[in-house]
Image (cartoon, rainbow, N blue to C red):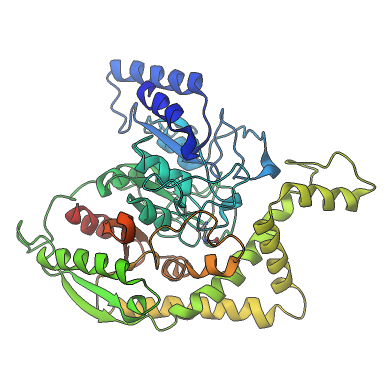
Length: 464
Ligand code: GLN
């Protein structure tokens, strides 16, 4: 913990951390040492990790990258934070030590960590480029070895895409696998927490601690027993040999994921990774996800709609920023929200409010929900012919900070390969797959059927 805190200080220019409290981290580390001395066998005892700033933490401020929540301190830990760390409510906690809070796009809205009120996080491979988003601080911190692992959240790609752009491993679990209690809501039907780390094994160790039902606090958390995701990672598939551990596995390549929209350097890196999977015994088959193109318009209706509703709680009354001067109640709302929210968040609130309003609801929101259902059905059909789907995470390597600055749609288009699994609620993962233009990292996305996290981690582990 001490060594990493020093490293975090030395690399403050990366903008990965937005809150550090060395005394508090060291206090947790000392408590872990004492537990260790008593023979406590908690699985992550004393392991330093860090949390995305949309997960609330007792002791550290939580701002979700927004001026709206500047200085906010939560009186409780998010369920996933408690389970990884000090525990609570009858849960012992895995014993990890918190290093601090990680930068992200404001309220997790963005793909480049350029929409944080606290400034951008930078890509350690090239500090003039974005680390991806919205969990950009998480990916940058893991890639720069400021922490061995971090939490992130993924609504439409925010774990997978920054993991890909920074060359680390990340997994978005099945919707409902991890509790959303204490995850500051963006789009509740899509939000899901998960780990980013330097290997599939490390992701498995974190996910084992994070996952599990939370019936009293998140009614959408799935009622499934905890699972040890690290178990069996080294074993070949049933009937396969050690030399060809993936013998019998069918990997589906969606035709729509390998079109001209995906940059040639990314495609070349992916082909090499896929050839390696073939060498390990897997069989590549072509599948189709015909509504891939519709994922962007559907997501950018549904997510802002839910965001406009979730963010209505920031009214300057209960918590968050309140304007210093105002005429009356309405004026206080207006000024507090105009001052507290950044431009991208305001844009989403406007879009979301519009698509939910009387007269437009059927044309936009209801249509988007229908498309969402069709996209989920496309996956069901594709998984009839394969066990895992593979493709790009992002259409290009990391872009220069500011390059998409004035063009929100250009940023939305970069989400095309991550949104389908999000809309379908499926688990998705990003695994390092070599390098593209400029020696920048490329990620291979693995998408599994409902609840197939263990399968994704197993395939990813064979590649590592
Ligand atoms: N880039 C997408 C968005 O801006 C996804 C973000 C996320 O997964 N939180 O909404």
